Length: 153
Image 1 (cartoon, rainbow, N blue to C red):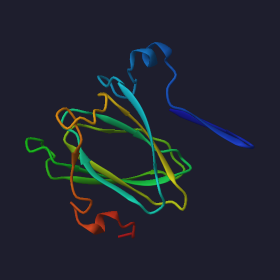
Image 2: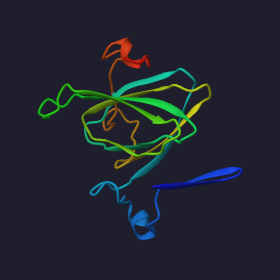
Image 3: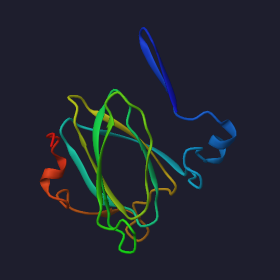
């Protein structure tokens, strides 16, 4: 990833290798192959949480102009990091991709005054069919309501 600005615009290059883009592969995440590209918006102050996938891996990107709190919780019983949580502020002037593996519950809160945008890539196609969906829902306050606060400690 790299970015540059001109007097009236900003450009962020997420991916450049045509051969790899055509194959669905990302240099940053070996083994991850893009099956679907999704775009979501989140209203100011709103929380979208929690959900977890059994098989699907996500790669999230929030534009630098937006500010989103991403909360992750490892709910995999056999994982060496089972029960651990992580909070990351995405956007806010910086650019990064975040890989969310299967079994890691995730949710987000828009910290900005305007709708926030999230671009996310998945390695599986979404299915709304209850028999084959990979969307598991968990309560928004799974980790307690305070996890969404941004007060400095």
